[in-house]
Length: 257
Image (cartoon, rainbow, N blue to C red; front, top):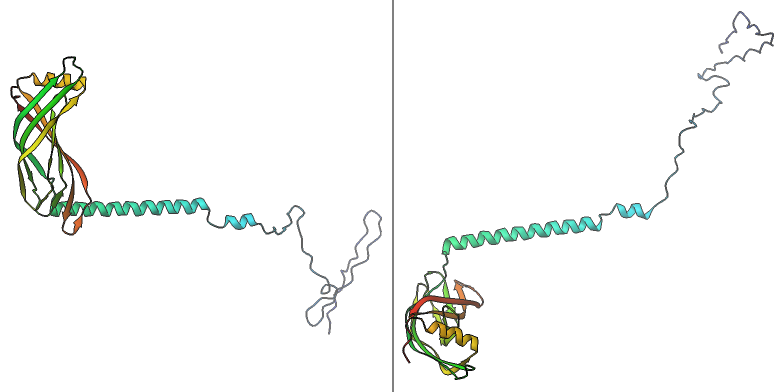
């Protein structure tokens, strides 16, 4: 059974003398709930005219490479971690050095010259003052001490020079044999000789400065010693380190003749 829809009782009138349009065909509703004339129509989708049409972008290698981490970022990360590791190692080394210093309290060795004897200082100059010869002889005592209880020193032979304190002219040279300085040990060398037995030629400037120094009532001297030392603390050993020892403040009278 179908339901029938009747048109309105009052027919529509024409406007402006025009023809009356025919009434629309009545729609019938079937038993399954669909309306004749509408079920067969497809739905229309409204697309605004001002809306841009989407077009898929083609594949680009540039965008693909941009997604990877850049070389600059990798370099910055490497530099950051390298600096961080170096700082950590430096901090650990500083902590280890501080702990070693607090536990062992290392101190440098001591050197002293308690006595110095001037045997001979002869300066001869030619009549034309073109050549000067120096002959000298010094005898002194050297003391070396090791104040450490956990550190030992091993010395190579010393090269000794005696110089004038004012002009710095070398007057004599000598050597001290190699020796080992143990924990809390003191080593004494008596009769260390520095000499210039074979007359050494001096240039005019050196001869003039030295002659001015020797005319004083008391002449100042310095003793300089150079060597290499190796340090050992427990099982730790160091390489040979060159050191220079200067003993100064000596004054003496030059023997006549």
